[in-house]
Image (cartoon, rainbow, N blue to C red; front, side, top):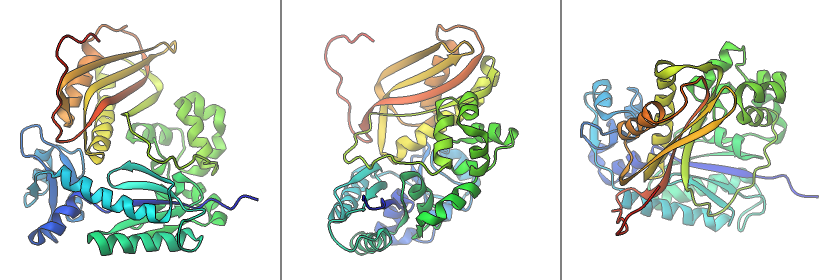
Length: 358
């Protein structure tokens, strides 16, 4: 009989900002945002002191400064963040080879059969947190469960420096009470659609059934149902190289024209830029995906020699692709934004000599 899986999700607390506060003691206890000060600059990370004012990643920096005039803005040091991330991952690998990084600051670990320590997800998570604090001077939060989704939800429940364990016999009740906004893939637009349908918790998702959810939300609807039922057998996949970052939403009713589509395009762009920042990456290619009422799907892409990483840059390209490119002027049922050809932030892209045809 196979042992019950033990999955740990470790998430560093306000990672970039915490590194800056660690290295500059005068910043400790102060609201700090990592990013630039240019007209198009966005927040790459915010300390917990800044978050109390509503400052968050992907927020335009000028807006963040209006929310918190005393905000201390410091430039990003991605080389330092990568070095610390490698140090943290080395700690993970002491306990298991099954480590799946999601970004510089978070990872899944399968500790069902650990390399060291007792076969207890709770004790191993506690040991990892202690090692990280002792060796880096930074805190991390961890979640422990039998699946990746629940472990990730758990790691965010008691931040900063938290440890939350969801035992197998607690999972059904926990999922039933979990707000839909906590389910992976449910952004503001999808949440509002669900609320309009009376779907507010995991129990409501289960009650609707997979067919209805798939009809209303596309393939992700069935994923929502499976997660709400606690069926999450996705393996922890080591050394997964991320090649793209994307987000999409299926509308409950078809949307017409720029006026109805643009608010969702903004939300999707904010989501992918925030995730891009957490990976300390930039992107050369922006792609917009549109699915029409008859289920025909098209994509429009733009690749630039100069990588993009800021919200206004991504949004400007996405708007051109969605509203100014050659495409059918028809009702849209699905909209998506993807960033690809990812490069480490701070790297210099050297284009090949000659011509390149898309």
